[in-house]
Length: 269
Ligand code: C5P
Image 1 (cartoon, helix red, strand yellow):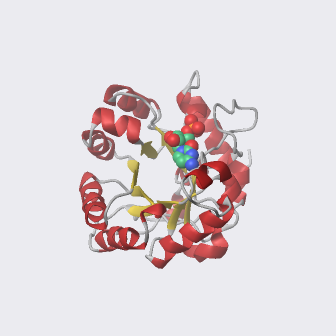
Image 2 (tube, rainbow, N blue to C red; image 1 turned 120 degrees about the vertical axis):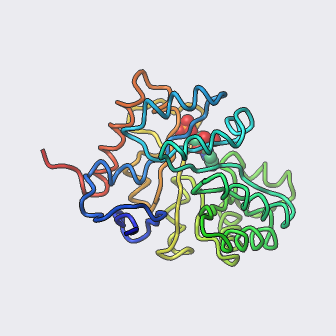
Image 3 (spheres, protein in one colour; image 1 turned 90 degrees about the vertical axis):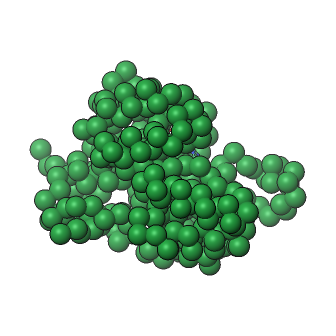
């Protein structure tokens, strides 16, 4: 029988159905794994598959972004899925409604579980994308990207948006919700405000995660896994702290322990 995986972090965590007989049988680290998405930000399919293989005991979820998707094509999504992984396809769709809807159907046929669309594509595009997903049995959960974290007040003003970034995030989140989208990509700083908008159904995916003491890289608005989960994040996207580590599996395991602790399911010994 197919059941939903345990709702381990408040009731706001929603995951696609997995063939799990009894969620309570998941170990603490298995529960933590449900919340970690590793960004496969590498330039080739071989590098991505090698990394996924090194991490297969620690990671269920992988994010395929534009770099890898453009280099390796849709086959990389199918390969990861065929190896039993769940894929977050971060393509940030932004096009006319008909094209966005068709792209959602294509992503579904590849087996992606999460897919990003730009909320700035507007109500008609969001509606078309969500309706396309709703018409499929294997649709990815759509995640709306509100304001990119690289956009500050000056960048917004340059494209004709006078609103403050936080107000623009809230406006675009409401557009997503009005179209029936309940998933959002948010920075750790934004995520706390989201549950009030989305309600408990929100699926909140948070990049910019750094375990304490880790190198910030080019990320400015960062947070630890514990902080992000406490603010309401459902999924944490982690790239370089795992992928650039001397031993990615050990780095991932340390993050899993931190997630398990934040969820209150860590082993006591
Ligand atoms: O290496 P790092 O952990 O910074 O990687 C974070 C991942 O999340 C990257 O793939 C990056 O493109 C993505 N991302 C982000 N900030 C956003 C949206 C996506 O860092 N606002």
